[in-house]
Length: 239
Image (cartoon, rainbow, N blue to C red; front, side, top):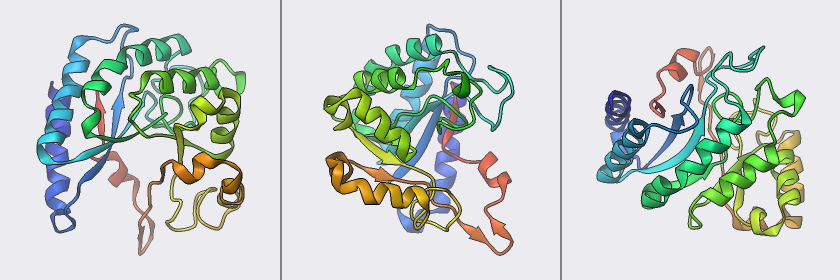
């Protein structure tokens, strides 16, 4: 409850800050860090309170679930990672609340693994203890059919779409940091993976039909947006 109240208060702060832009979309991370395999009712209550608040305010949610809050862990669990069995257990319980609130969800990103659910810097990746294809399949199977879904990283997106087949690939759009912002990320406009994705788009119909998206960095006089801003980001909620 307290996490939902804090998240809603922060949401309202940034709505006031950007009032002149009339914001209608917010990227929201629900962190399941440290929760038991059976999610407690308090977590669902917190999610529902936040969904209700966004609905009341006319805000749509770009949704992602995650565990890990920092880069480069050196041991499993160090930064809140979850095991594959825990992740699949959690995914299997989320369907009903997403179905109930699909009207307020703009799109859902596959998430769950890596720092901030971004599929990078998680310690199990090199040992393949996380079955990424099984994770993607579980998320697609769980999510309401009406929801747009997105995956990060062009090679990962194309690999898992190929492995899972058309029934899954036709539901999976694409997202990455900074697609159209300043040239800093490997998949920013004009870089290697951007070229990879756009050059292959005509071969993959879902790229033309599904939703693309990105975070967009700002640039200050002394470089990128400072980390202090990210630490006070309104889009996260600990469950």
